[in-house]
Length: 163
Image (cartoon, rainbow, N blue to C red; front, side, top):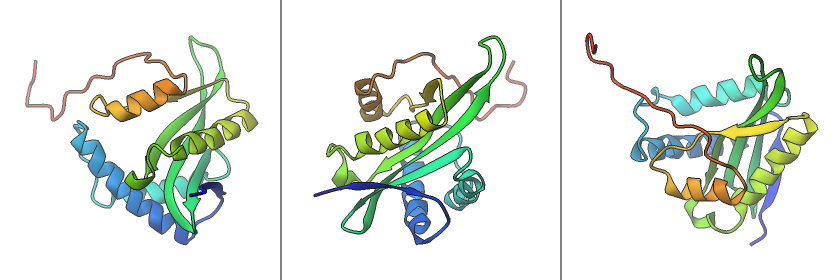
């Protein structure tokens, strides 16, 4: 099995497969503790939003084995301003690997592609979020040198007059 990584630069049939993966990923998010349900057709909304930034402030790279997409990574750049000064930061928005390709270095290859893109963009750091119930992702990102920096809390749904 030789998985190759390809950057996607425009809409095409590859994004049909990525929409399918996004639907699976959204279901996985709910199973792992996401409190806010995704909107109906969230994968199509994601596609539209990604295509607006693709090649400028956004990257999508696909892992391909024998002409089949088996995973993808979605990364973005943003400018942080404020008490930390002005910095260009990279953000991993989504990563998904077909279950039969997990633990076969697809995730590392996809991250390496995103990291190379971040370097091309002169990013000073990379951030991402992991759901509290996603132990596999916690281990994966830790193995790549990421550290837990903060905890994100949410109260949802908000009852009438909660305080």
